[in-house]
Length: 381
Image 1 (cartoon, rainbow, N blue to C red):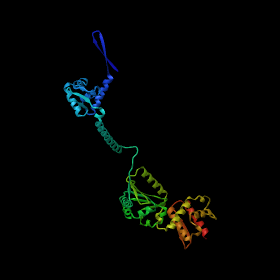
Image 2 (cartoon, helix red, strand yellow):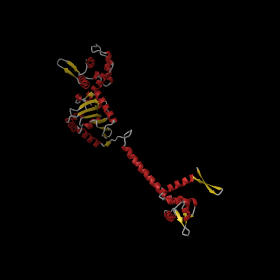
Image 3 (cartoon, helix red, strand yellow):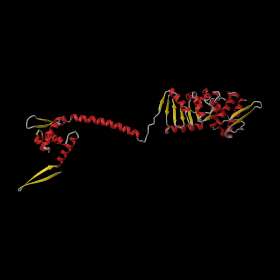
Image 4 (cartoon, rainbow, N blue to C red):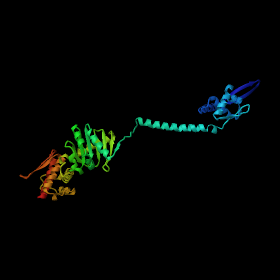
């Protein structure tokens, strides 16, 4: 873009073209030099010397449009800032120092400041992101050594308000057997306690130390998870005794708690057989699984003259050899199985030689046990 200015000298026209683009560039450079700490007069004088070369003070005043009263002080300031050199002869001649050399230290200073400012901004951004809500959240938990795990477990049980629920393998049962006083305190305060333990701990002597008011069930458990008041969750590693304490139950914790409730509803009562010999209890547990899940009963009636051999072979497959089990042991196993599965029992009136089966659930379920007992008696006789 150009602006045409016309000067008239008599009958002759002279034309002067002034580049607006160049003027704009000069103004931009002056403004940029001000960002380096130069005044507008200093920036104009330095830029003029860069363009024109060495100049006298009066020439700098003219080309840079500086007031004559300001030009000498301006040149002295440029010399002090090591941006120009002023000759000692008269008239004074002033020359600009090469920009690379003149601004080298200033550029390095600003680069250091920029890096420091960038680090500060990054730290501030990190703090900001930690404070404001995010689509995903990082949940924290505490790792406890074995001694701290047991102490914390006792403390959580003692100070529970409403409920204590736990999944326990053999390691967990041993740990909980050391929490008797904590259980007593919790039960005294009306806390509901439910322990779902592994089948391998049926008849375990450690169960004797758990108060009678604690509900016990058995199932397929292979981990140790403790829930306190639906607020805290502790997971214990059976391989080393270390624990992980979650001080709030989030989505993961509630999912684990729902899994516990489902497992509890499908588990079998243990309290009634807590004092039974482990080998008997394990056989009873196997027998319960056989009779509850077997399909062979669809074609068998209680009044069958020849009980099916399929029932006997099913028990043999699971390690209960009917033909080699004495009658007293088998009656004890059946009695234990009824206690596990339906809170029932088996009684033997030896005087009148009468066997009685009782169950708290429907008669069809009891008929299976009656059929099994009849099958056994057929073989034993």
